[in-house]
Image 1 (cartoon, one colour):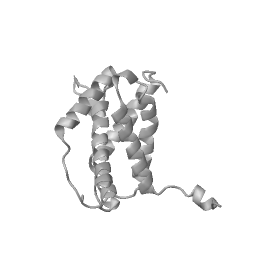
Image 2 (image 1 turned 60 degrees about the vertical axis):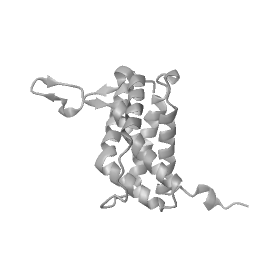
Image 3 (image 1 turned 90 degrees about the vertical axis):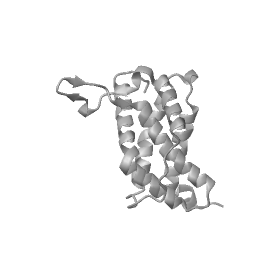
Image 4 (image 1 turned 180 degrees about the vertical axis):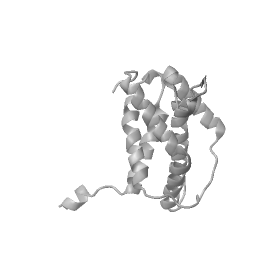
Length: 171
């Protein structure tokens, strides 16, 4: 016999974050030219879940347990692949782009998605490859979110929303 409490126990904030991080990395890993833009629709539903999951973790630690730079070649390879797949949908305007007659697009969805991917992927690798306390990885994700990839997440959510409202991707 099963208990009703067991069935309806919600996941912990940490387990939810790990679940959503894995889902995000798997989605980005699966993106190919053959998919066209069909991956953008699930991404548009996944980014807000990622945002909610990281915010539910609470406050970041004061200092990181691990500070490791990503492999720049791997990062550039993913960025380049995503940029080709996104095409004209990659670039977007940021508020500070228009200044005294100077107008340049400076936002890149491929860059946003790549930076988020490498932050999350690094944490998942830490969890999968060591006996360390997963709280260390969660702390690193939180600190990274507040210092770096949180802005990428917000920019990606905003840009994808804009693409949807202009009917440039399916809802």
